[in-house]
Amino acid sequence: MSEKKKTTIILFSGEYDKAMAAFIIANGAAAYDHEVTIFATFWGLNAFRKDSHPNVKKSFLAKMFGRMMPRGVNKMGLSKMNYLGMGPKLIKHVIKKHQAMPLPNLITMAQEQEVKLVACQMTMDLLGLQEEELLDKIQYAGVGAYLADAEEGNVNLFI
Amino acid sequence: MSEKKKTTIILFSGEYDKAMAAFIIANGAAAYDHEVTIFATFWGLNAFRKDSHPNVKKSFLAKMFGRMMPRGVNKMGLSKMNYLGMGPKLIKHVIKKHQAMPLPNLITMAQEQEVKLVACQMTMDLLGLQEEELLDKIQYAGVGAYLADAEEGNVNLFI
Amino acid sequence: MSEKKKTTIILFSGEYDKAMAAFIIANGAAAYDHEVTIFATFWGLNAFRKDSHPNVKKSFLAKMFGRMMPRGVNKMGLSKMNYLGMGPKLIKHVIKKHQAMPLPNLITMAQEQEVKLVACQMTMDLLGLQEEELLDKIQYAGVGAYLADAEEGNVNLFI
Image 1 (cartoon, rainbow over the protein chains, first blue to last red):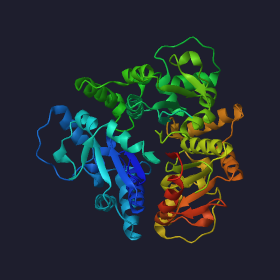
Image 2 (cartoon, rainbow over the protein chains, first blue to last red; image 1 turned 90 degrees about the vertical axis):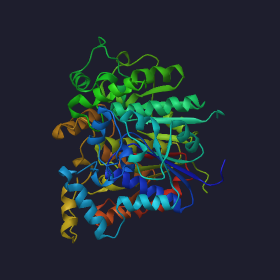
Image 3 (cartoon, rainbow over the protein chains, first blue to last red; image 1 turned 135 degrees about the vertical axis):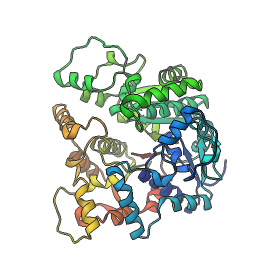
Image 4 (cartoon, rainbow over the protein chains, first blue to last red; image 1 turned 135 degrees about the horizontal axis):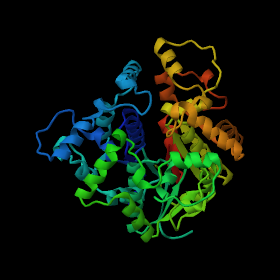
């Protein structure tokens, strides 16, 4: 058992605001010298997707899911006040105005602080996502790996 | 205090995908020899409802709630991409295709692994649900019982 | 480190039912003699807003957010079965009928039990909310203060 405090976050939700909350907490905990893991599953995986369209072969269903789900954080909506996409623009505007960090920067910062970003292998398989479609330096694991981290920490959140 | 590690999950949400996540984590933790409790409250109770229509007497309001809420997991929607019910069918299709477990099997597995399934008594009363309408081998308790389990464990999630 | 058990809840969501769950757990934990903190962030801040319209100066954007977001708990919707506002009325009706506590009373009770209510300073700034618009006896802090509480407790939920 490591002597560092551990923090784990399961990122299940696919909304911009919830992903922001996850990365703000993760970066805060890393700054307090915790070992931090973000385990992205179901719609949360969208936060780890690249903006670009990697050239990968897919089944029909996998293509459908791939198209329906937002490709990267800048295409994600809000959990409240989404207003057909106006909400996210407004939020990004006030973030900029207050010199706060937008989500892509929060993710970069998390990687710089060695927050462990893990993609749920089962969801990857179910939705037909491939590693080429996700950001670099993502790990791939299952619920067992999550539990091994979580059972040693106190701050374990489901977002 | 038991020497086993404890994991508790409050299942508040009534969607198929969130209930799946709850039961996958619960089954994983039970396989790692944790003592696991799923405490279903508010819309989460729908995951514990039987498909059938037990013959119970109800007040007008209780009947209304009973009709509006999904009866059992196969009537639950998704938290994202529900598309008027197409989403759940698609998810069930890919689960089958990948030989993963659909929600009813995950619940059976949880009961076989002795995951404690607890229904929130206060919500039962508020929504006029009766024990005959829920699956067998469910316990009934309040927030005090939840806290007694949770305060001894590290992995405590709200889904 | 205090010897009391600690419970923390991040209230991110802005719905009546989720805020109810947060305050029921918080009041339960306080009754079990835990030190309890509710850290309200993003839409969860609406639960701390006064019903009234304090006379504060605001920028155009802050005014817009202020108008779009519900002013106090009695204007909040439900996360499920909202039905254009009928859902919350129905819930409040059954709460009254069963002599359970509606949300404003749960908040008062939490304050009487010395549950620490903390508003996220970053969200206040982003949404242009001012202290005069929130209930009395609220503290203002950031993610660091949250983590200081959470890392000493076992029951740490994100709602």
